[in-house]
Length: 313
Image 1: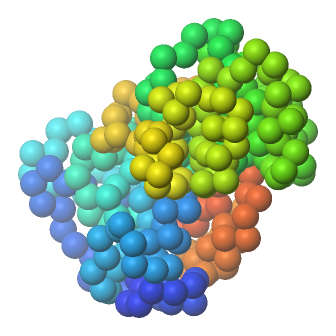
Image 2: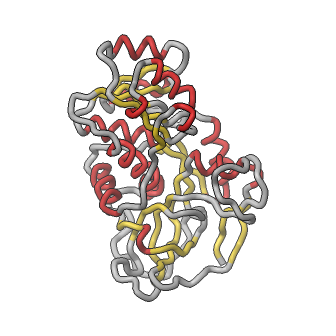
């Protein structure tokens, strides 16, 4: 049996239940992974909270990114073997002590990448990578990022700085020192943001990335940013005439590049809090309070009966 997080009605964290289900065998092209860590994302609680654009069939699973150990492989699996340490993003159901998913969703985890960071990297990291890549940006350009200290924001801002792009990022004041330490120029949320950005960038903003919501988009437009140069993954783009740009299909080369940057110390994914698997409600309560720097993760340590391909970090 495997413990799995399920919910059978919409609502707050209280609707989440940890239940036991039989462990499935991997089919063709699939692997079974024993969980070590899994990242929480805002889309998870939005999907759980109320009917919306997400497909939900009760009882529903939850979670889309994780890291763990390959326990078993199905027919036709050639790239991964039992004992491999992996991380990746799946369509749904990442919050399970053991889960069966397609091999194509997982990249090998470098030994120098700790479990908690690996568990929160794949979805947030590739979302940041793909959003940044959707705009034609060059070294010396100036971008504005809302929610710059969140899971996607921390990666996107650091990737941009790494590429020589000037980054102004909005965040609560408690995250300003951290952003400065990573080369980002912080501004505070609220009514004074437009004036603060104009003072920092009197020649204007090349592109803006909304990771917060409609209020941020309105401020981008007030600053005169071309709507074609505004990306959002946090609100409906249609009323504003902008683009919704999130993560594309799982790209293993991108995951490998992100992991290498983290291991090399070029990018940091802060872990705001880590909760054991059976405290999933507490984990969501922490995420939904807001002002999280980086990621909130669940941790799991289900025993595996295979020899590890590489030692655990």
